[in-house]
Amino acid sequence: MSGYLAESSYGKIKIRVMKVNRPASGRHDVHEVTVQTMLWGDFADSWTNGSNKKIVATETQKNTVYQLAKQHDLESIEDFGKLIAKHFLNKYNWITKTQITLTEEPWGRIEVGGKEHNHCFTKTTSEKRYAQVTMSRGAPAHVVGGIENLIVLKTTMSSFIGFVGCPTGHVKEDEWTTLKEAQDRMFSTAVEAKWTYSSDTAPFTTCYNKVKDAFLTTFAGDPVKGVPSPAAQGTQYDMCQAALAANNPHIADITITTPNLHYMPLSSLTTPAHMHAPNNDVFYPIDGPSGYITSKSALRKAKL
Image (tube, rainbow, N blue to C red; front, side, top):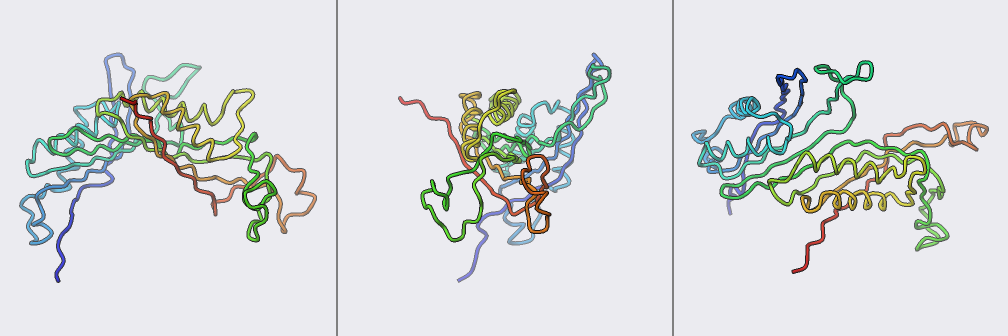
């Protein structure tokens, strides 16, 4: 029994683009985006017979991205992805599906004397905007938005109690549980989320900003009083519910991961006892092992 080619695709990765918009007002705008292109279509011969007759060279794909960037302001990477995807389907009739993945670096304006500069910028934050546009011939685009590496931290009002192996846990004793309950602890994570747009004409940039704002305000709570986080899972869920509500009906679902970024208190066999407790001001970061939490929340569909 012989094998066969079940599926094939190819493309170009790490296409880096810096777009500078220079309006007549003199207030410039910059967008730094990394693009990946992937193509599917009638070119199995390249795999099975070594024929490149229908192969659009990946160098051509790279050049296409740069040329299309001259036609687009890149204010919305989702819309730019749609432009690229549609181009390949329109120009090459043997291509049946395209997938364009984009990530945007954060640039913000430098302030001088309390005023935003017209043409000078700095990297402002750690998070990156994400988008993926998948388009098949004869069908609307399937658009996914996202945010990567949104790092957040609260220094109090987070606890972790009542888990398995604790007196109030579902199982009160567990021979492998050594972690002590924490009534108050540091809580930090690097949020990564992907969301599915309900249509390919959603207000993408507005939705991105609303998701980010919902995540941050739900995590932090009132600027003076804060908000309790009795479970990292619960905080994650509340963040997604707030983002869905803020973007109804444009976002259908959100998949989120919030890996723990641990800051450990000074307490170990190698640290002198007088440095242990009480201690609520000096911690040390560790890379791992760390918790990893993920979930998917979806907008309820209206009953007919």
